[in-house]
Image 1 (cartoon, rainbow, N blue to C red):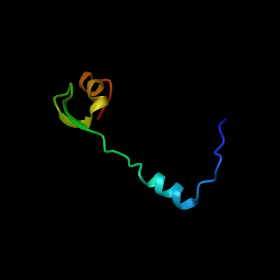
Image 2: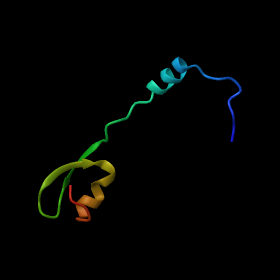
Image 3: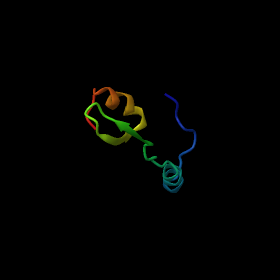
Length: 55
């Protein structure tokens, strides 16, 4: 495993980590087999549409 040649300070580490932000999932409007219209994350839309998952 690679080792860093120089230690990173705590401030530099925390500054770097603070740049990573979680993104909210893109919601898609889907009609379920029961006839309900729901909003689910876009990657789950096909499964909800086919009835494999409940929203």
